[in-house]
Length: 462
Image 1 (cartoon, helix red, strand yellow):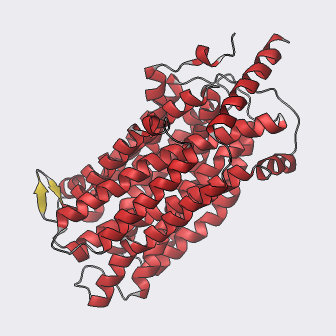
Image 2 (tube, rainbow, N blue to C red):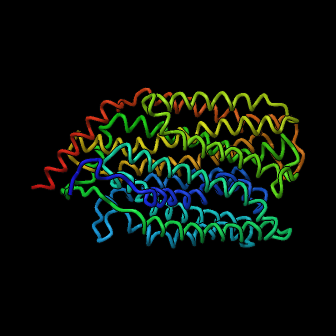
Image 3 (cartoon, rainbow, N blue to C red):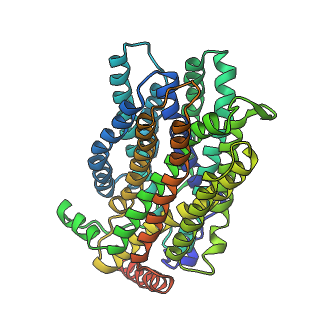
């Protein structure tokens, strides 16, 4: 079979199928980012500081499980490939544990916290089981960087669509299904998204194909990590990804508090069945989808890492403007949120495509392909960012004397404004500037593609 990139054009069905896997992921990440801190504090009755500490402690496990899953996936050999089997079998525990988080049994305060620890750690392990192989699948779906970027565009556009569906439907569904019982509403709403997530992962499994078959070479875990850490561009990319994701999740986790306690009237219906929180979150995620969709156009004019720097700086500008927005100007705040998350849509699309570029670079330099380990960093960034981004507002709420479901003092209101705007702005700037140290440009990537295509063709012939 020819190894030229022209023979590996991805069909619409396959790009759609691949992208729907991240919609399944963002039914959870979107739900957690927007509502987990609020659910734990305002609905389930846990202390903000206890929740923040729990989110951070859980990342100690992820620091081991994410690269560990990458190593396992790289060494998997089945009739379905290295990575696709995990989409088939891992989706079931993923669905069950996601629902369990919001089941909300009526335990004592200590029992509730223990239950939160067990279910949150459990769902993050299930997320690792499915999403590390899912992300690594991108590296073997096509040898063409252009085709992988197209697949990534579908992925991030549909990821944004998944989060958009959560933002638009979660609060109306919670009110409707709960009938006034917010805990029951969250439980039933999450049940719907959990079932949908499982079905979407199965569709991704059925519609995708692993085209790059790496030669199986005996190698040690130590050598694999040595190969990864020698890739300086990967290190810069991982740092940038973690910081930018932390910034955006902190923004999302703060949004419901920003709307409810600063802009006011969170339950006010402003469009059809959608309240202020739903509209604010949804409009931002529409921006993310648009940002992801235009990314292939943007990369025609500049290298990916330079675009990440630019988009990050623009995002910070919109966040700072949001800090100075008067509380009566709800629609101005919505507009700034739309443009800010729009820049993130382009940024995260670029970052995810660059992880597979780093995998290609590593194979080009060393002859070893460790896609699972390389892209497991993207999963760790997502989960670490989700946890730390949710934890930072929790610690801030505890520090400013926040009291749930009550009018806030001037100091608490100012703290909420800062955590929703200034804190993520600082993080996103630092993350963007880390990309100064990323060295894989367009010219180098073209050479890598050409050289690897020749190697693979020669290996196939022999």
